[in-house]
Image (cartoon, rainbow, N blue to C red):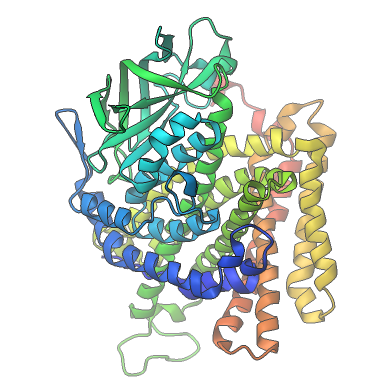
Length: 592
C-alpha cells in the first residue's frame, strides 16, 4: 500500500528561498512568514498523511453507490470530510466577509498539493465547491452571497459546476438545457448534464449547483447562455433548508479512475433556479470558474506525479536486483538496490526534475493569481491568463507521464493493485481531459492567448527570461549549465512564434497543427526558467554558508539534469512545428 509524506522541506525552499513570499508587495503576504507557512504545511500535512491517504485505496476499491437517488461515498469519507470542516480547511482563502479566512490563494495551492497527493478523488468534493464560491463571489448578488457563501465556506454545503451535456462538451453553444422565466423572478430549469463531479453525495446537507442554461428567445450560440444557482434543497428566508428541488442524480459514471468521487448524470426536471449576474452573460461567469478549475487541475497533475515519485523512490532504495556494474554497493546482501543502476536513475531523475520544477511553477503561478486579484493588477492578470493553458496542459501531460514512469520503476509490482502505483496512473489520466482537454488548452494558447493585448503578455514573458539571464550571467560554470540552455530554448520558442505569425494567416492549419508542440515548448521553457532560478538560489545559499548543504547541492544537480536532458526537447518540438501542416493534414478523412 502506498504512503504519503508531505515534501515540507522542498515546499519551504520554493516559498521562502526562491519566491521570498513574505517580502512580496501583495496584500496578505507579509503574514506568510516561515513560522506561519510551516504551521500550515505541518497541519495540512498531518491530516493528509494520517486521514486522507489511508482512504485513497478504500475510495478506489469501493467507489460511490447510487441508492434510491442518494449517492453513498466510500467508507470513511464522511468522517474525513467532517475533520476537514472542523479544521477550517474549506474556506482558507475565501472572502472573510462571507465566512472564509481571507488568506491568499497561494495557501490554497500549498494545502491543495498535499490534499491531492494524499487523495485526489476526496479532494475534488471541496475543490468543486471552491470553484463555485469563486464564481458567486465574482458574479452573484449580495443576497445570493449572503444566502450561500457562509455555509459553502464552512463546508456545511458544497457546490458544483454543470456545463457538459450528452451532445456537447467544448462547444457549449450547443447546450439545450432551458431556463424558463417565472412570474416571481425565478426560472424553471429543464435538461440533463453529464460528467458532473460531486453532483450528488452524502457529505453535506445541501449542494449548490451552478448550471449553464439558455433562456428562450435569447441569442444563438454561446451569447445566449446564462448561469443559474439551482440548490438541491431550497433555502428558506431564515437560512434553513426547505423542500427538495426538482434536481436528481440519474446515474453514476463507470470510470477509469477517481472512483471515490461521484461523477454524476444530473437531471433537471423544472427545477427552481436563480439567475447569477445578467441574462445571456453566463459565459463570463463560467470562465471565472473554469480558469480557477484549470489552475486546480494543473496542481492535480503534478501532485499525482509527486506522490507516485515518492513511492517509486522508496521502492528503488529497497528493492534488491542485480549488481552495480562499477562495483558492488551492498556486499552484505544478495544484490544491490536498483537505484544504483543508470537506467533506474534516469527514470527517477526524470520524475524528480519534473515534480520539483512543476511545484515552483505552480506556486509562482499562484502568486501571479494573487497579484492579479488582490492588487487588481492588469499586467499580472494578463500574465497568468497566458500561463494558465500551459500550467493545465503541460503539467497534466507530464504529471501523467511521471506517474507512468513511477509505475515503471516498480516493474511488475507497479502493475499490481497491492502497490498502488496503478491507481495514481488511472487517477492522473483524467487531468488531461477535464476542464478543457489539453488539445483545447493548446488551441487556446496559440489561437487566443499569444495575441492577447496585442501580444504584450507573451513579449513580457520573453523579456522576463532575457532580463533574468542577463542579470544573473557571469559565472562560466553556471552560465554553461543554466543560462545558455535557457537562452537557446527561449530563442527557439520565439522562432516557433514567428513561424506561426508568418504562416498562420494564410494557412491557419500551419499554426493549429503545431499548437500542442508549442504548449510543450513553453512548458519546458517555463520549467527551465524555474530551474535556473532555483539553482541560482541554492548556489547563493551554499556560498552564504546556510547549512543543509546536501539539500542545496541536490537541488543544483537536479536542475542540471533538467537543463541537459529535458530542456533540449524544445528543439524537437520546434522541428515538428516547422514541418508545417502538410504531414498532419495529408490524409483524407476516409483514408485513416
